[in-house]
Figure (tube, rainbow, N blue to C red):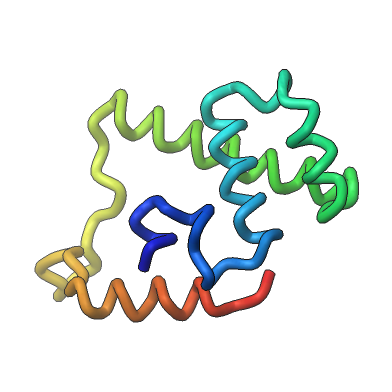
Length: 105
């Protein structure tokens, strides 16, 4: 849960590689990756050049979609017929987050 709440660097539930994926996403999102040579080197210990490109493209894609949706004030999804809400009970979300964090990358 610490990882889901933002303290991923101290989470015992994430591998070092998983923590670096999050760190890389932060650097790319803040447009700071291009000047962080140490992070580039660290990422190269976990990922091939092709994997780094793919990961960075995915991060950039979601940044684009978030900015577009936020700027245009778009709803993320329309509920399917018969579904009254998109709200997820907190306990179900917590279980989902724990399952995701338990997976190895």
